[in-house]
Length: 246
Image (cartoon, rainbow, N blue to C red):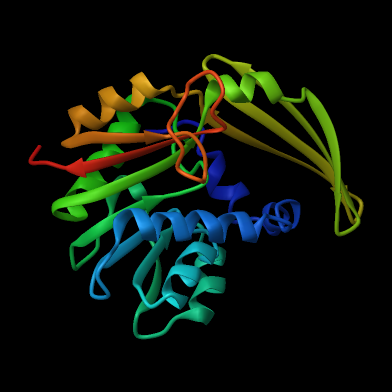
């Protein structure tokens, strides 16, 4: 059992969406276009967006004509995403540790650092086994994660961001092989404190977990242009894997 499930409250909070309301949609669209070029999916391909939030990536891919299912643990996010549903776009609340879905999927996407939120490597493996169970034979999994070496170089120990009139005081540190972000602010006379806690996983960690859970790592990319991964300078760690029999 996870002892620190911070993501349940924070990702389902209105303040999470306020803080991150100015995400770079152009960057996301360019990345998704690159993924379409990479996968060359058929129009009848079943694609799942894992930890989809309010569904911006699913909605965009669906606008290109693809069939998408988006899942997330945050009920309010899924409720917002459901406003965009159509016969080829569906959203539902699901826990990545125990996915209960049909039909099987051809492509699974886990984008923009939506992995490593748990306390243990064993729980990470539970997630990967769950993903394995919903993929078709030879299905593909793409995980878009941060490059821990790059994070160490650019990380600001403290910064202030003002969004929608709220002053978010954000402190960051790396401790116990985790990237910890403390977020403090005051709104309407009440003080709030949330924490983001992401495991500082490296490529070798992913290779080991993927191979143990029935995946074959195929390629590694270092940014949203899908350039080759370089552990020292790449901004991202993007891993393409193929499902194999576990």
